[in-house]
Amino acid sequence: NAGVTQTPKFQVLKTGQSMTLQCAQDMNHNSMYWYRQDPGMGLRLIYYSASEGTTDKGEVPNGYNVSRLNKREFSLRLESAAPSQTSVYFCASSERTSGFSYEQYFGPGTRLTVT
Amino acid sequence: EDKVVQSPLSLVVHEGDTVTLNCSYEVTNFRSLLWYKQEKKAPTFLFMLTSSGIEKKSGRLSSILDKKELFSILNITATQTGDSAVYLCAVEAPPPGFGAGTTVTVRA
Image (tube, rainbow over all chains, first blue to last red; front, side, top):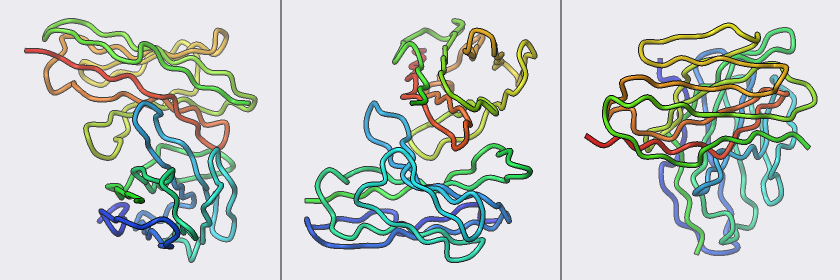
């Protein structure tokens, strides 16, 4: 099992460019999440998908969009990148049954720099 | 607004010392509290706590939850340099919300 995979690992964008971060999990988990991590701020939730076919905003959704393509894949899109979006992005997945979520498994992260 | 607060933000100890990390929370729909360890890459799961007063243990690490006072502690005994990491607390409300983390540095 590969667990949670993310692509790319590193990316440099110019202000105004767009890009999509890809995430896939092979653990048959229902729930998937996108976080950003900035120094001293822990993990902040951008968007999540509690189950296939649903997506919800997290704490910091502005400037991002997501697509739950199928049960395995959850992508994050930056339509017009800004320097404030320079961060490390983590995708995660977890099992969810009867409204209860279990521990999350994280991908290796994408280091994004916007100049 | 849900809040998860960890303290201290950082600490430095010597090998063999005992470390106690705190996580307090204010959330409206508590389901569980989870601890993760992050060593310069992705966080990895340590414990999930749902009931008050039941200690979870794994080797030199242990954790307990107090749902009345709304906090959890993570203890690390006989620390080793390999325990150096950021320890993250998350509360599933849902969805999960993370604290800022505690950076633990263990010196040889």
